[in-house]
Image 1 (cartoon, one colour):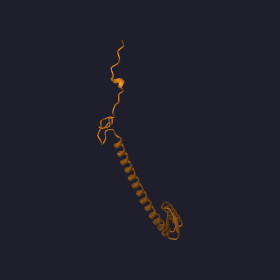
Image 2: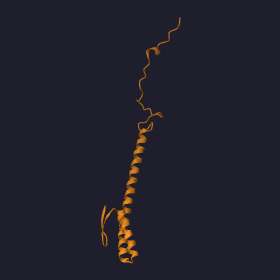
Image 3: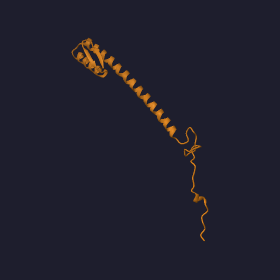
Image 4: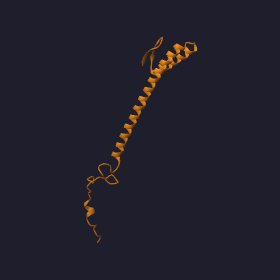
Length: 116
């Protein structure tokens, strides 16, 4: 919110509201033939127009920085999730030392009994 002391009045509002209000006041003053007052209102409108532009540029830059950070996090996440990344490993994502011991039942190692 902004408090604005215009040429002959005080207005409170957002930069967008003040810009629109001073622009309308300038048009009204032009319509009544008061070119001096109209110019003063238009100068105030221009001031708030510049503030709006600065705010929009800052918001865009902030959004761009957020997007870049998100992309970096996404790339880092994908690199961690990719098989064979960083620790090294085969194409199936298996790493040395990941092998599980295999257990076979004693029956599978014995020779099958022959029928008599």
